[in-house]
Image (cartoon, rainbow, N blue to C red; front, side):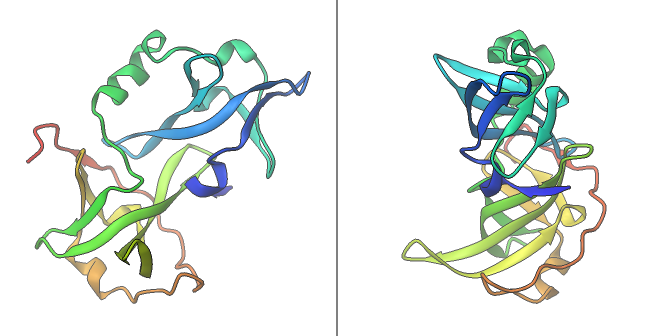
Length: 184
């Protein structure tokens, strides 16, 4: 099932058996090397992670987990702590083509809940803070994700722009992404 960042943001995280509230989704952690969604950030008494492998189901009104012990502090899960250290965000990141044409900022992104991979990014230029036109870019077009920008293939510019209420393009399989930790 495909979900978007905006659909997940703010959803309660609940234990499946008791329906107890464990927190709310505050952010998603994406591994920039391969586009995998590795965890959700939440906060109850302190900042916690919910690894995606521990999510049993996502419904329209909640993220469900079998075991509340799945929530951990960021330093408790080494694999995810390493991804966090990369300090790479997808949402609100600037998007450029290889030839350095500015396409806009990521205003939303989509991922597949089976396999937890990034599938598309929604990119829009803003005028006075309001998105004007939006491009839906498949993850197969992403070349590199850095802390301050995402680089996509030049061919993306040829893809027709969609209006904010327009139709989506079909999903393509995600590509292996390259990470540049040097910031270049």
